[in-house]
Length: 143
Image 1: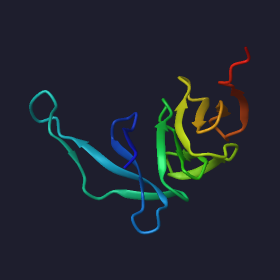
Image 2: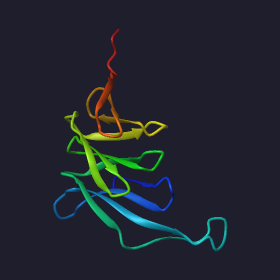
Image 3: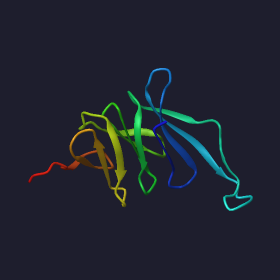
Image 4: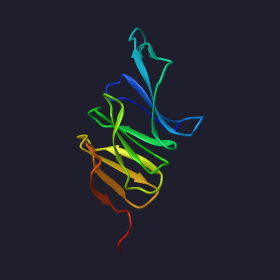
């Protein structure tokens, strides 16, 4: 397990994992039920059965939901960023501009852009709708 998040709507718990059989990166999703029956936190429960979606050829190291909850970005050891349509859990676009492990993904506040970082210089900025390149923020010093 590399990372986990609750969905913006609060109905799912999502984790970045890898298969113990073939090492493929997986997105696991559990339904999160809130009973609301007692105490400050209610009666929360995670259903045992997870939906599993294979999304990378190696471990997934990072994932993030867009603030509007329509997209999920994943990044992994295969140097790819997957942009998933949450309603269908289909990887609709793949960003292939990196050559090393993707360690971080993040969406802009308005869900229009996605940033990704790998083990190489710079932050790649893309359109969240299709992964098109917007630009690269360099981390190299020019002085």
